[in-house]
Image 1: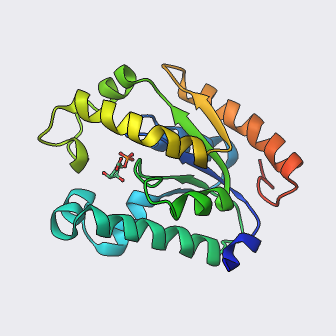
Image 2: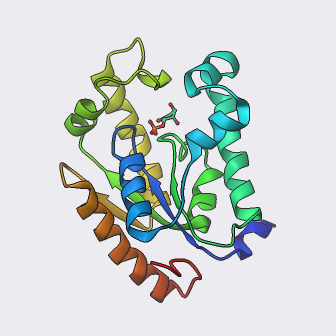
Length: 192
Ligand code: S3P
């Protein structure tokens, strides 16, 4: 029996493909709310003492996914006193176990962007191992169709980000988060 499901939902969790704007929107949400931003990739890099590409090279993607799962479990078990904004790595939904964990953490928003937008935003990426030495367009198309059902299953709400301005996106998320908090009767968004 999963003990973790008893925990209240408190955070705002951003999911979506590489380049959809999770980190940028996360920062904007942090500025608007004063809540801290937790970036799962950054936490893992710090824990392991290596960059994401180094972790992939040395330990492989499977191990990286296990680190993501361990981090989600840790966040659920060791609730910080206040809510935070959680920006996740694009592939965090690939592990089936992670999807309910993400939903339990809080209001989970899929930042959905079309492939051309993602292509444009990942054009100069050097720290994303899954996009190195490959046909980026084909890869993003593949990832987009493979992962869309996982994002849909995980998200409480989907927002089409397109080329919208980042603070506008953040504002829309906060409006929906407030509704979610009210109707879901959960503890998060105290300061939002
Ligand atoms: C990944 C996305 C990356 C990072 C890693 C794997 C993925 O995060 O976690 O390179 O599988 O889509 P961003 O979505 O922040 O680029």
